[in-house]
Image (cartoon, rainbow, N blue to C red; front, side, top):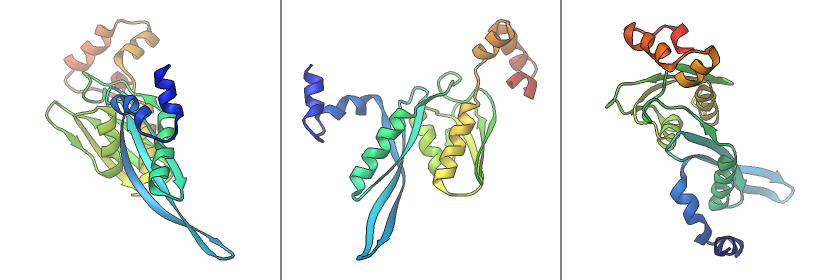
Length: 193
């Protein structure tokens, strides 16, 4: 009960501590936007925020308000509502290479060996850091618009599948699927899908 009372008091930081322990949020982009009205211009701010638990869940959100902190708060709330679970290999990298697309934005994500680190730029790096990926190579092709890059990256991550889910769909054991990937040297698209 005490927790609910702390959150209901207002916009204080008392109730947000538990959320901050669970989720990590990163501000990707902030724009000043203007609405032209009869008396002049009304200025506001639009924020793009990525939120994740660093254990395989990530989401993004947009928020608009007259003040920057309020726009960031709205964006992070929307991001927490739109979380996506992504299966990770050994909790550090992707299971297989994947492509994603949104509008003019196209991204290519590749699994990487241990010690590679996050080789990705800007908005994609924020997604991988909040997702909990430690080794990945990513390339953005096309637009550099952060909104489209984030959406394309999330689209690619939604197409990520684990050997366990593939084994259950095919009615096989996980060891049968993994033995072909490890034993064959190079993985083929049929093994990854």
